[in-house]
Length: 126
Image (cartoon, rainbow, N blue to C red; front, side, top):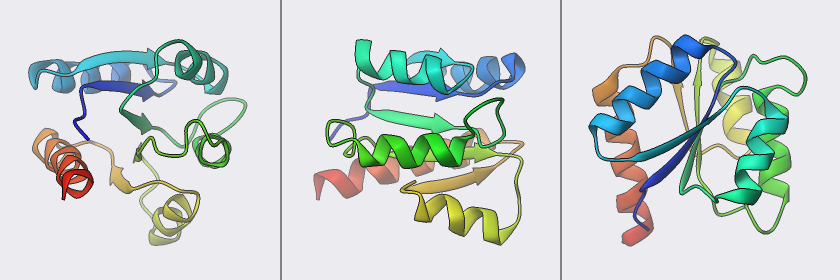
């Protein structure tokens, strides 16, 4: 599986810009959503290869959204990486239990993010 299209879900315009910039500079196509409803619309319209998910958002939070995406058979194969300010180990474990493939804390390190994306690509091709 090659990752080319990424959906970034975060209620912070600054984070959306920052993450989109990293991904664009690495040759990836990016779409963004500021909440769960927008994210679900994007999923239906233009299926991404990867989702970068914030946890703390108004309405449905990232944990809840990840759980609902993973329960939907048409989206269950889309990997999700949390990009969040929640730094506790219990948050990381909970995020992984909701179906995320990885967990990065903010501020996001561009090199770490790209390494995690490349690791996902490698794990799907081997």
